[in-house]
Length: 334
Image 1 (cartoon, rainbow, N blue to C red):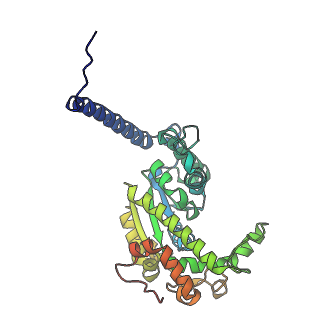
Image 2 (image 1 turned 90 degrees about the horizontal axis):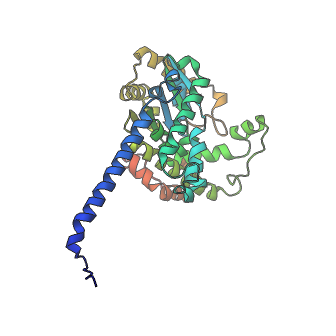
C-alpha cells in the first residue's frame, strides 16, 4: 500500500508564490491591453473629432458651469455641447440602478470593463462628430456636463486623452441656489412649462429642510465621483473653484488654458470675459427666482436658516475640508 505523505507548509510556499506571480502577470497584461485598446483609434474614429480636443466640465448644477462654459465656447475654434447627459446615461445605470450587478457578466455594463468601455468611447465620439462636423478637422468641443458628472469616472476611463475641468462651489451656496430654483414661480418651473412638462413634486416649498438635506447629499455624491475621475485621470486636467473664477475671471481663464495646454490669445480671453461679465447681464434677468440669481459667493448666509446651514455643513464636511479649509473661506455663521 503506497505511503501518503503530507506536504509541509514550507514545501507549499514556492508553489503558492509561482501561482501568485502568474496571476499578477495575467492581471498586468490585461490592464496593459485594456489601456492600449482605449488609446488606439477604433474603426471610423480617425475620421471623427479628435478625443484630445474634448474638454469636459464636471461638477454640479448651480456651480457656474453655464457661465464658464459660455466663455470657453465663445473662443475661436471652440464649440459648446450643452448638457448631453451622456454621463448620466451610463453613470445612473452603473452607480445607482445596477450597483449590485456590476460583477454580473450578463449585465451590459458588468464584468470586465474592456467589454464595454470601447463602445462607450465610440458612442461619445460618434455622437460628437455627427453633431459638430465642423470640428472634425480641428477645434475644441466644450462639454458642459453637470448632471452627467454621475458618470465622470466612466467617461474619463473611456476617453483618457480628453481634457477635464472639475468645477466646485461652496455647497451652501449650491444648495441655496437649488432651493431658489425649485420654488414655485422660478425660472426652472417656467422652463418646464415651456417644454410642456408639469412642475415636479418637490419639497422646496413645503418641506424645505428635507429638500436641503437631499440636495446636500446629491452634491456630495456628484463631487465625490468627479474627484474620483479627476484623481484617476492621467491626461490634462484642472480644478477650479467658482469663488476664484468670480473674483478674477481673467486670471482663472488664463490658468485654465495654460494648464490644459490649449493655445488662447490674451485678447480673445479678455473679449469673452468682458462679454459674459456678470455686470453685462440685464438686471431683469437677475435676482431671486431668476436663472442668474446672485453671482456672488456667501449668499447662503441670508438664504438658509441656521439649522439648514448645519445640515449642509454636516453632510458636505468632506468637501468643505477638501476645497475650502486651507484658506478659511467661507466661515460658517453657525
